[in-house]
Image 1 (cartoon, helix red, strand yellow):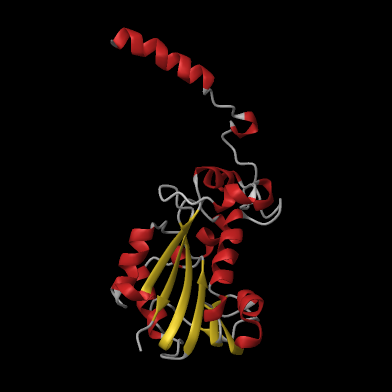
Image 2 (cartoon, rainbow, N blue to C red):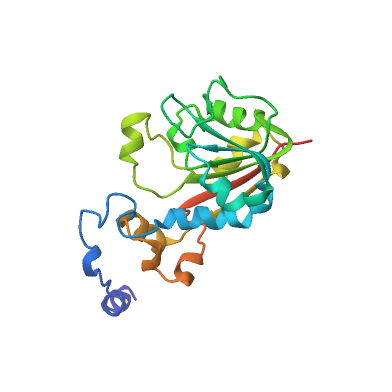
Length: 231
């Protein structure tokens, strides 16, 4: 039986031979996440997530580094826009504060906190998650994205470190310490093709919409969470 199966496997392998084209290389096509080719794939997923949850971007909104997403997805629903940065020197920042210690962050202050691609650069993520919830008003919402399958961000590694990659389970367990499980809504984006393309630094318009939209739970490129603070 084994003698029959072995050549049969060889025939299947021959017909399903991988066509590597220019991906068979030890160096990526782009080292800057595809910014030099167009819109990075993870940014496409981030904006899809924020668009789907734009109804939560309202009132007094906090965002990291600048308020691009606040303005783009909140529009006229924004009453007050604040920008958080960890250190002095960012002219767009209205608050200089530390998510780990909570220093500089007001409590029970925000209707929405847009926290994209930030937690992976904070070593003490447990303290940071607690302070994310603490700065929300009761009933407020945090819109969070984190990296799953991703290259290291060398820019951030040199400045404050690049520490973590997440799964849907780890992100859920992280915030279960601070809000009930029913107040956590997780969604993942990505599949084997979009993950390989992202690691190589291809832009999102180099894949079809169908290829981008297909979600495979075993290839989580981006993990998102809607965290609602209990009333």
